[in-house]
Image (cartoon, rainbow, N blue to C red):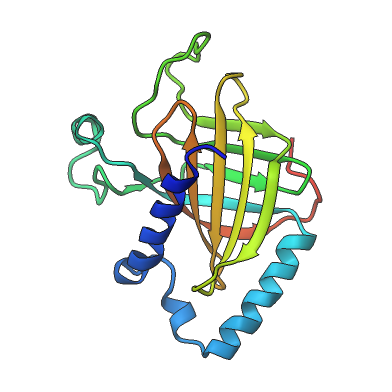
Length: 202
């Protein structure tokens, strides 16, 4: 899988830092270890048996000097947004998933490598709509969190593939890491909800 070591390293960093930033673990920390384990087991069963949707709330771009310069020049002064933390809670970005189909539309802030045929105008969002490849779900070895991983191809560019990893917490907060063959790695935070249908909406 593409850049596996990179995404594993970033995932470990987030698992260590997320408590300090109070992004997802607050409610998990207030329950006992037994309660957290039971809740995680129930969540794993639901994830195995149901389609779900992640509504994206926050973007954490991979910071480079070039990315910082561009974002700092376009972000609106006086908001809480910065080059390392961008609120997109009301913008409608999402990922839908079932074991046979996945669909997503996510904002992208970062650098990308130009590929032949990469002609999508000003829209450089991450978009995909297809079958998940090499899907897996497992419990993290050290943390009370579930890991879901799969690959999927871009909807518009045949040469672009995304490696997607979810870290799903008992309180249904989800951290999403996406590594691309053409874009810098990017990290999102969102909330999980299970859908009534067995397939993502078309």
